[in-house]
Image (tube, rainbow, N blue to C red; front, side, top):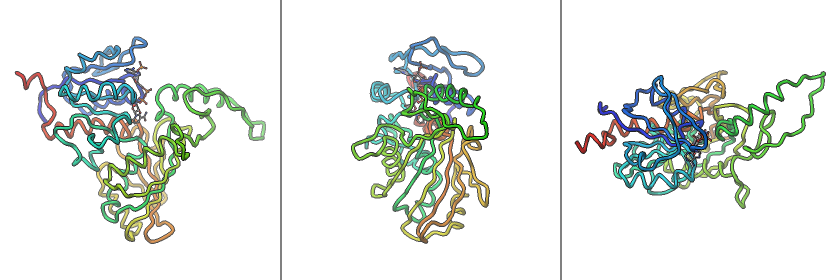
Amino acid sequence: MPRTELIVGVVGATGMVGRELVALLERRRFPVGELRPFSSGRAKSSVLFRGRRVNAPGVDAASLAACDIVFLVSSDEVSLELGPKLAKAGVWVIDDSAAFRMDPKVPLVIPEVNASALRKDRRLIAGPNCTMTGLAVAAAALHGAAKVKEARIASYQAVSGAGKAALNEFFGQATRRLSLHSDGRAPVLSEPKSKALPRAIATNVIPQVGRFDEHGHSGEERKVAAELRKVWNAPAMKVSVTAVRVPTIRGHALACWLTLAKPLSASKAMALMKRTPGLRLSTGADYPTPLSAAGREHVMAGRVRAGATSRELALWVVSDNLLKGAALNSVQVAEELLRRRWLGSRAAARG
Ligand SMILES: NC(=O)c1ccc[n+]([C@@H]2O[C@H](COP(=O)([O-])OP(=O)(O)OC[C@H]3O[C@@H](n4cnc5c(N)ncnc54)[C@H](OP(=O)(O)O)[C@@H]3O)[C@@H](O)[C@H]2O)c1
């Protein structure tokens, strides 16, 4: 890796993903010479980096344009506004929002799966949806060996996937609910009002993640299908999804059924998965859960078994939505740019 230290911008540094990203830059020793974190600017805020507090003011476009690389971890609207301008100004931009993922000119990259999609002249790069990332990694080798024709997926998505407002609301609701005592009967609870999610999430599950379209598919269901096809370069693959928010804090879990072009036994599938980079496979009666996957950098899978036919496999996948589903994947993309020597200090290059 080049030794040159970089000017690194993070827009949305005070959010769920942003705080993880700043911590990863430090933990993975990314060559940060100067960190420029930004927030909405609505309140005075800061982030902790290498033991000191760094102020995170509202966005300053000129300061961002002078960065070597900028991570956008804020919202679709902010990414739409900043991403193309920064890339045009020569800044590498790694965007975690959904704004550009399906743009054919923007690479959508999970480094272990499709680093080949990166282009030296495409400085705006999208990171994928946190729900599909786990499956895209876990079953990449199965797709390579036996081609997935159809994927059916049910998701169990943690509240942190909806951002800090949703998590704060969940904590408030859960704290009140956990003080309940049973008199021997299961209590019938009323449903409190919810602002950040479509329904109350504590002691509940919600079969809606994002807005429904005219066909009844939610935004998350559409994203998972479209992005899996793009990352696996499988435009004809059929994907059906039911996306569900569950009252866990971090770690999205997926129950998946894959129909393959040719038969593949569960034991051969597991042998392939054991060799997959970024994946940890549980076998036998062991399996990962959102609690065991939380804070882990790798994707975790288990319960690999034969489906209803010799061409069908069922599996269970869990990954930390804030790490591999967002911040870690973005940092890994940046590390790949460093490895290729595409990312360096623009100031040093100018002399
Ligand atoms: N959460 C996940 O699991 C996940 C996974 C994959 C991708 N993503 C994507 O990552 C992005 C961030 O998600 P999140 O969950 O971290 O959201 P979040 O917790 O709600 O944080 C949002 C961040 O954006 C900042 N922000 C809000 N409005 C802004 C503005 N106008 N200009 C600049 N900054 C602004 C907030 O600053 P304040 O602190 O001042 O409010 C905060 O730092 C979203 O695009 C999301 O779709 C999230």
